Image (cartoon, rainbow, N blue to C red; front, side, top):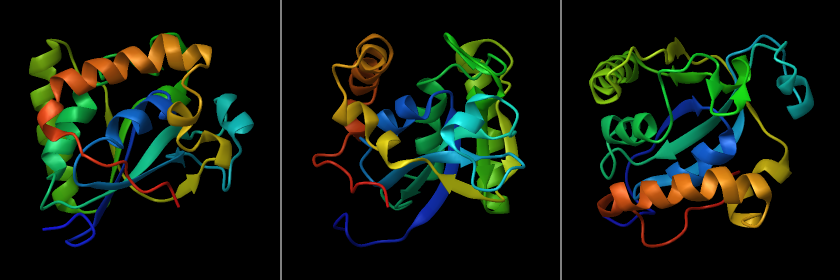
Length: 188
């Protein structure tokens, strides 16, 4: 089945900095689009600056549209759990605050069950308690345009070189069989 055909499903996940999560998940075969944004908080239409304060309740997340016939949600979440540390509460590396929490926002009971099963499996992989929040989806607010495809457009930027590039290299090695052959569609 061609990438332009097939079913569509959407899940929203946060694994720390949305630049990192977008860079990794956008390379998976079956992923149609990855859009960075904010979710899980209580302020409508937040800005990056307001989310960075930690007072909006939002996490940096990505909204992932994918074809479950090409990449089932369980497989997508295996990559998600393997490419960030789901055992650290409200932080990823040097990024600290509730906006960097590990979170899965599900849209259906089936997504919730899959997320819970994959979190349990990830705990065995990490050999530590997984603190990823698994919560019902309520709203997603797209990030400002300059955040979209950030790593792709800014590979020489310090954070990209020091944090994202090594993560992408490791991901490509570990999940080579799951990589797409062509770049995904840009975020909406």
